[in-house]
Length: 345
Image (cartoon, rainbow, N blue to C red; front, side):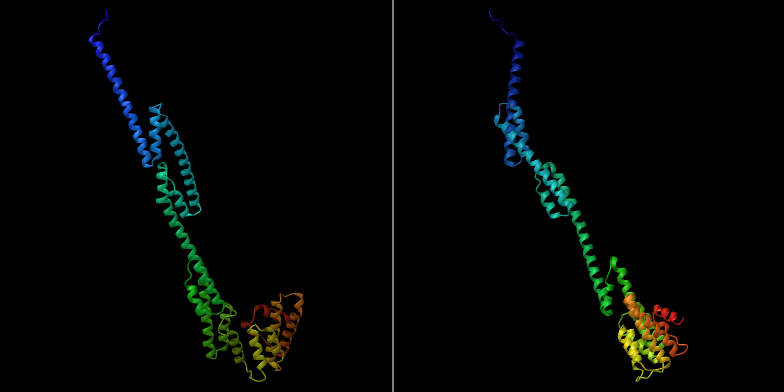
């Protein structure tokens, strides 16, 4: 005869059955929720969330081959996506080091994974804007340097061509590293102009020796400067002595050619001078000075040694033409005066 279960035992069994049923229902609901999450992630285009949901579903439902396949597919796709993102990050960083900022921006914007969101945001919103500002500053600096170089070159060219009026505003506009060079040329223009104008004033006042000194002071600044100062020195030298404008013209023209750098022409004119006394001595001196200058310009080599010898002979002849003759020392190179001094020994 079958024994009836006691009430307590029957109660326990009922509770166990209820717990089992509840757990089964909860598990079924969890599977449904995971499936919905996975499908929603797929529709939203969120492969990472889809991978998490499908892999959780496959773990929960061992027999769900579809979930397992989806888990494997999204795991593979997300791995490839992470690699592409890492490659884009590396490419962007490389482009950034080369200052290819537009290229770097495109590389960082091509990153799709959320795991790099903070990194990409930092590059796009902080690093690249700062790099643009730095690059812009460097480009502006280079542009300013190029402009200053151009102004300096134009100013120096105008100075060399004796166009002081054109040179001054160009040189005054130079800033930066070239400013010192520009200011030096501006000072030379100012000093040359002051000395030349002072020479003209003294020349007009009949103070020829002082005028020649001022002219030479200007020529020491720029030997080929404007204003025809070498001709003015020759003219002032002529005015200092009793030189007549007829027979003494070769002497006047020869000295002018000497100061104009036409040394061979100066020698020809001075050789033709037929005067006597102190004027003859002056002609012979400048003739020797012309020959000696040509010798120095030729490099003082053996081929031009005859010019040196001729100069010494003419210096000696100048001494003999006028007792106590002294050359115009302030207006002649010390190098020439040294040879003249040695010719008397």
